Length: 66
Image (tube, rainbow, N blue to C red; front, side):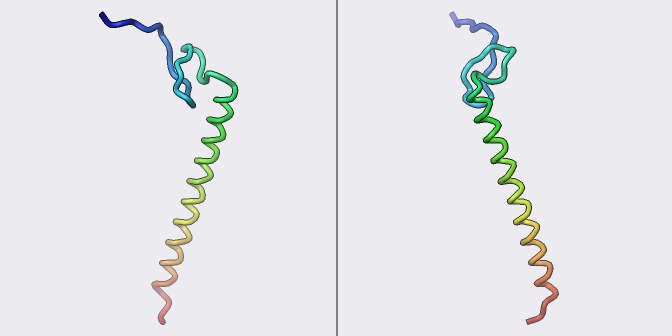
């Protein structure tokens, strides 16, 4: 017979089971998750800037005759 678990959800950072009314299991997990999101956002911004520079460089090179 399957075992029924009490209602719960999982920590957004470490995936540990937590009560339904919370998003994180601890203050440390909340800070770590925020840091990960900020680093991911920074990486995406850097990627978009690098892609824009590459496209601009390719566009300029199409008009330059060697």
